[in-house]
Length: 160
Image (cartoon, rainbow, N blue to C red; front, side, top):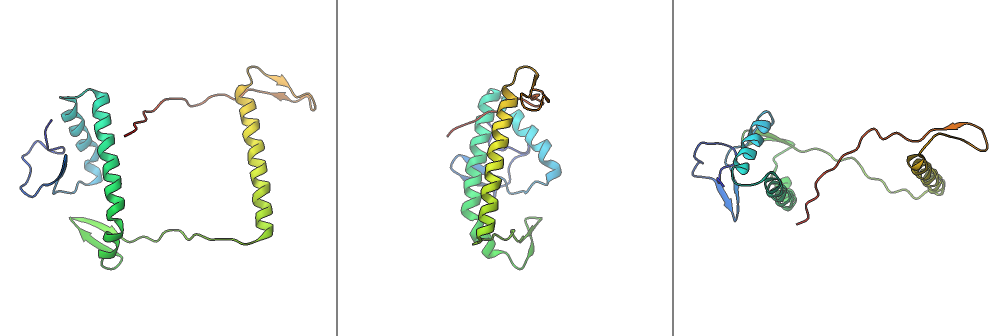
């Protein structure tokens, strides 16, 4: 498998290697993502099945997620002001939404009522999903129709 993922051109001398991972010196723009992903897929599929390629990419993505979380605090402390140009892209400091803690009896009562209603909704949905044919409600005579599945599919879970 080729070491370079994003180009057929030889890699610049300042490529960063960390064990089996290679980071490129250039930062890709969002408009390039589709083309770069297609190039990466093509390179991987030359020597791997589609499933193997998927697992390899998923593995790298999860390793990079961990690396990002490890660097985040250091990067935040190095940011000058609220916006800075780094490697040709804009990096901005963004405020997170405020989190609140409430010590209020009425709110706890309302939250409990909400949870009870949500539980009833969940039970009703399960009933409608399992209902095979239309039926009349015994109390009201109202027609109850089974739920219709409007979306279904599968995904791949990879456990490392």
